[in-house]
Length: 384
Ligand SMILES: *Cc1c(COP(=O)(O)O)cnc(C)c1O
Image (tube, rainbow, N blue to C red; front, top):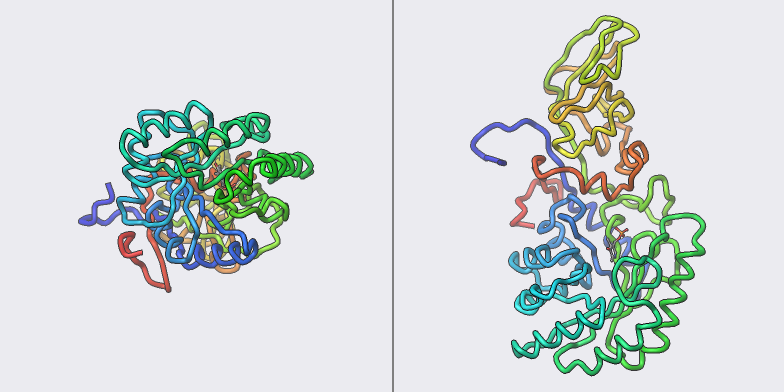
């Protein structure tokens, strides 16, 4: 779809790999001596799996975390050598692929551990496993009370190397932090009972919010995702570090017109001009992941000024009211990112649409080409 022989519409997500490196090194120093597993699931939160994976490997990440087998395999096929943990639950039929592609496996129950060991024994390989303990997220993993049994079974499993033990926090991005602190305490209690059995297993529990807000959650390793991309874990959450937003979503004005007072704009005429107004149309819409929830509430930047999105966001186009100001066909429009002294963050859009910044960037669809920048120059994904 991104055909290099034609002149495409100028809608693009620019991914600043220097900003990614900056964020990684800020976070890495913040938690030292803890190591960083960079979480790049879901196409690196919409930023490009392979480019971000390669850049983070160059920056010195200790490991990468992804959600699914497919993502781990794609990274291996691209030549990445770091340990890669698939954080999600596994299906038995996938175990051979984990072994073939040397991916770390989440063992989230006794049954899964048994299946992993059996498959590894059959294929004459050793499986690298991280044991998953559920301390309150209630997603996957064994309950804290069953952790000792899982650990003992893992130690006995002839073809498994226990390289990690982990849990996940449900409320680290909220106030108060009491529940998250309780989860951390419960995990540490589990660890104190089993760590002597698995001295080489790295413990980890902290996501971005926890590693930045709960000091005692920084164990042997931490697992930031959203913060690597320069976004706060929940809209408006204040962080103790300066991060740079990695994604800039840009387009250009494709149409200009003047509408009379009273004219309705876009599907359902959900916005009407109070007075004669100048409108511009931008070739981007919810088909690109710029959700319809932004209708009538979001802003964009043109010529360094903020202007409101008016009327419903269409699948492929949206309208912006520039009032009495000037804008021309071809003018740059910033939907996420900075222009002049103004800035629109993923957090701002998340707030407007009742979600988290993770979803705002992850939603930017594959119809929007990613353009990678490093050292001020555009580079191909394969050159990262
Ligand atoms: C997504 C995820 C993370 C990263 O979370 P952020 O909030 O993006 O930092 C860490 N651990 C697990 C298990 C995850 O699913």
